[in-house]
Amino acid sequence: MADFRISGSRYDGAYCTVDTFRHLLSERQAIRHLQCVAKALRRNSVYVLGLHLLPEQGFSDEIVRWSGRRGKLTVKTSMRMVDLNRRARRETLKVDLKINKNGKRYNYQSVYSLRTYTLNQFYRCLKRTNAFRIKEVYDHSYDIDSPVDLTAASEDVVFLLQKK
Image (cartoon, rainbow, N blue to C red; front, side, top):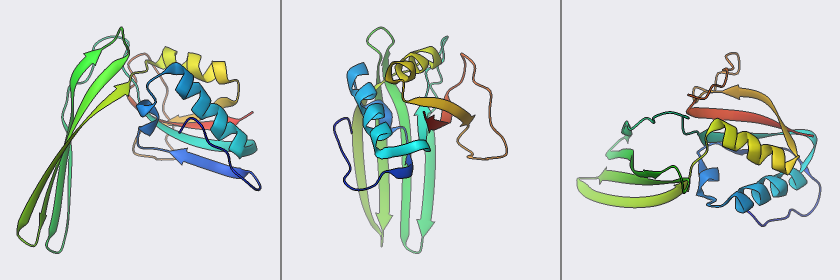
């Protein structure tokens, strides 16, 4: 994610909407990623970046759950933060995946270390790349007619970044 090039012509857009950006565990990797994306885009193109921000004060410790069913297949997942170190800017996220397929049950568990960003920390990272400007911000409902205002308490956001 932090060291790639494209061949051929540049693109009009790119996206990373599922918080994958936070898997880049250092500021250097994050900046390098944004620079690589910028190089792959034409001027004024867009990069849609989904990001879970850490509020300046407190945090949400809710368990996020979703499920889906199609025929004899059922998938259930839950995600929760199991550790937070603000000083080191690390969050440990635990993901449980339960699958029932034709009566057989499968359980999977993953634990991820993610980099945390407050709104101001993300602003600084973006500024250091000098490649994008924030065009608009949305929540995870992705309603293009309902942009949101960012505050120090903002959490789940989708940035519409425009390449300078």
